[in-house]
Each structure stands twice: as structure tokens, then as C-alpha cells.
Length: 452
Image 1 (cartoon, rainbow, N blue to C red):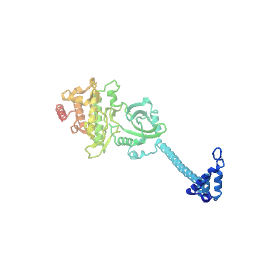
Image 2 (cartoon, one colour):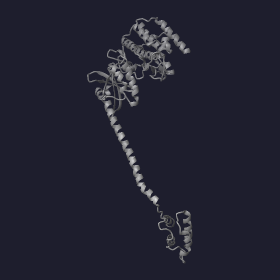
Image 3 (cartoon, rainbow, N blue to C red):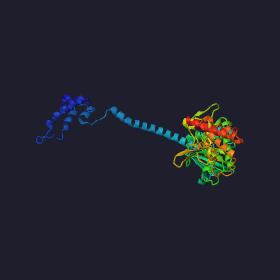
Image 4 (cartoon, rainbow, N blue to C red):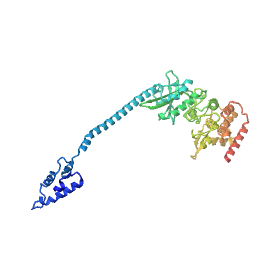
């Protein structure tokens, strides 16, 4: 035991040799009667420990499993609180900086919301700066809009659509207006809103709905809001009179006036505006009527500016079923004559009192254009006219208007007249060609399309 334990026991080899020697003493420390070790077995370990340096941590670890750390370990252990404190201080500093940043952004956002609600400016305003300089657009506050519409009262709703509702309202100066309120708004959709306001503000014509102003606002209760303010059309839309609950049918003279006014409005978009504008959504619900039944083309949400010199544009198909031109629906080929086709469908609705798409008795959908074409082909043009229409005009005029409508709906793009040509045909008392020759031309063209 002296030879194996009288040394430093830090190394595992020295510790093993010493413990092996101590284990041989077990036979001397047993009870003779029971053969069990006595409680004082530790005496051998204590005796062995007395041989070595009492300050040797290896001896304590080897003989008694005390696990005392060295002075270096003690130093490291003393450093642990310092490291922990430093880490906590770092995270507290980062958290404090982030908290201060978000508080600053929150305050800035509240300031921006206040500016928007007061109409003092937002990211959207930059898109209207040039418009406000050249037009009389009014930037309404959201409170003014709510007051004008009596907080968007349900009995003030005069129109509904996929975009939202249209409310009638009265401004502070007594002017009656229509308020087009978009639903499910987000800041991301402000670009399309800016586009519609830009289109309406860039055109002024007696047969186009006039824009008075707009409103953008973000509130805690209502969220993000976008509203367009236009003149109120007392007689609603053409769709209301043709397919709504109105009991009295429109007279021929009023229908003739609506047809001519709509044609003039579209002709201005195609040839008077710079750059020209393709509406893309001409339908009876987008033809509004003022107190004198003067037609006003409305809803420019899908309109496209048509750069000068371009024969057509390839774009995503938009519009309403039953009104979309074939080449546009099939190939996405958009031209001003796509609007001409839609206008022709509206004329057929106006003269026949039938919807662009209706369901037959057998449950199959049918297009109004097919119905009109079949009658014109067999010389039954006047059968397109709605039964019971009051104050019918001369037969020749009725027939002329129906033929113009059918020509506008021609399946072939370049067989349709332009809107300028349509205006000239509608405003002249007589057609440049006899009605019979136009009807014959429609019949021949229709057969060629069918064969192709």
C-alpha cells in the first residue's frame, strides 16, 4: 500500500493501482461469524490518504469520490454569474431597442391614419397630385362621407355589385351625389382604385358620369375605406328600367335617346379621349340615366388606356358574360370594337326587353345575339322589338336601329362598325344603304362565319 498509494493519485492509472491494493485488505476487515465487511472499511482509505499530500485534489477524488474542483475550475465557476449577467443584459438591451422601435412605428401609424382620415395625405395621395392640379376633384373626409350617406344607411343603397354598394347622399351644400363604396378594401388594392379615379377624372363628356371627388380612410372600426363620389343619376340604371320592378315600359323615343347617348359616350372614349380608352364592361347596369333620361356611361374599374398606334392589346379577359366579344373571350384580343360588340348587346336588350343571357323553356341558356340574328336572317327584324312598347316610332327607324345593333354584334371583328360610324348611322334619318341590302349583308356574313 505504501508503494502504490504514496504518490499523486490524479491520474487514472495511479488511482486504479492504489484502489486495487486497498481491496486486498477486505479479508482483514470482515466479521469472522458473518463474513460481512465491518463499518470501518474507510479506515484503509484514510490510512492510504495520509501518505499523500493533503492538498492533492486527486487523492480526494480517487479515494473518497469527493469531486473537488481545481483552482482553475473554481475560477471558471466564479465567472459563470458574470457570463449569465452579460447575456441577460444583452437580451434586455435588444428587447428594449425593439420595444422602442415598435412604439415609434405605432405612433407613426396613428399619425398617418389621422392624416388619411382628415384627407391630409397618404401614400395614395401622390397618385392624385397631378389630377388635383388639372381637375376640380374634391378630397372628401370619411366623416363627410358618413354624414352625407347617413352613416351608410341601408335605405340609401341604390346599387349593388361585386365591388360593393352604391349609396345616394347629400353633401353639405345640398348637392345630391352617388357614393360608390368598395368592400373588402386593403392598401394593396389602392392601385386599381387610383386607376379608376384617374380614368374618370381624365374624361369629361355629357354622356359620361362625372366624378366629383374621392375618399380614402383607415379607421379602427371600419378598416381601410375607398369611396368614389359622382353625380347622382335620378333614374338609376338602364337595367333597373328593363329588368327591375318599374311598372311603366320605356317609350321608343326614350329608348332611342338612350341608344344615341350611349353611342356618343363610347365614341368619345374611343376617339375623343387622349389616350383613347376601352371600357371593357359595357352593360345595361353600367348605363345610368339622369332626370331627363340622358344616358351616362359609368363604372370604369376595368377600363384600359389604349396607346396610340396599337391595333389591339392582349390582356386578361374581363367583363360580364353575354356582353364579351368572341375574339376577346377566346383569345384575349382586346380592341375598341370589343366595346362595340358589348354596345350592340345593350342595344338589343334596350329594344327587346330581354336579357343578354336567358334560360329557355328546356332549361338551356340562350344568348340574345343568337335570337336577334336568327330573326334578322329570316326577314323578321321587327320581331326583335319588345311587345307592348308605348309610342312606337316609324317602322323604318325601328328596323334601322335593330340592324345597327345586330351589326355591332357581328361575330367577325372587322365586320363591326366603329363607334364613330355607329353615331353617324343613328343620328341620320336614313341609312346610306337600303335596309334590305344591310340585312342581306348580315345574312351572308353570318353564313360565312358559321361555315368557317
